[in-house]
Image (tube, rainbow, N blue to C red; front, side, top):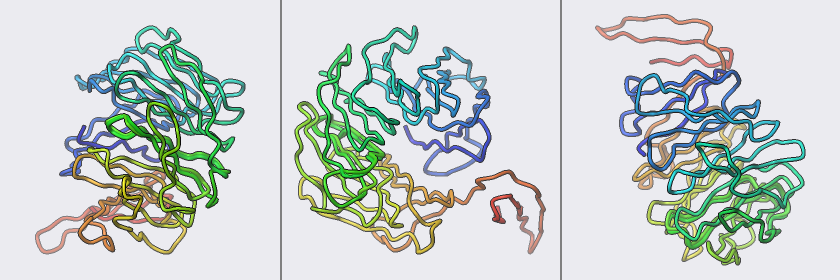
Length: 351
């Protein structure tokens, strides 16, 4: 899907944009959440989107019509939804987040019937991903410094992966589904929050990313650890997001050390490092590898198009507001018109 989801300000809508043009004229807007939207994921079929908000509401809605009709609404647990994953047949959804006694759920998209249990964690679950080929595997990453591995359906807990020494922020399966990777923030086996987990597109691997600055790669079918990217440390700060290349050979990481990196997973080496600045607002909190496009998201809210041929400078930076817009003005100069917008976020943008 040639696009990216963005949560704008405190509004309750998500936008889908064409990555090649980034033209608001081709944006779709969904405004039916009553609370701030945290995450949205397309079903692999492309016909539906599942979006979750801070109240714990999950809404599944149609993408084929401008009205974006609601199909189903669920409340998987009481608390913020932090991540969503679909199975490749678009029939099952896994949802994780800030529940009270329950931090995740996996169920059929059209009935809400359970197809397993998300257990094995005693704190907030930050990330979830599902291997996009059979036999299905599911992996989660949590504030309890661990990732958990599941087989199914019905999905059942198999074992805990305690390699991270800080919070595990992200886990991701490789595109071929054979391996996965984890990323974290303390320079040892993950001992801090696991922030992100992602299977590779082929399902052969998955990755975990954490607040300890490490990324671990695992076998996508067995959950056995393959390697730690970059040895003892992948980044000098916590890692908040990872994204696999479409061919499952490389991984893009985004870190609080104000950089993003491309990794050759098989060679266990850095291919490119993208320095994004020196201020707190230059911390990298998200990333996306979509076909030929590489994007990262800064704490400032800016979206950066990364240039593999010139890592020192983004191809383009999309500057939007992160808080409400208070004023607009039009300035005409030399036959051209410019729109100035001022926001509570302290920025003035020129369109």
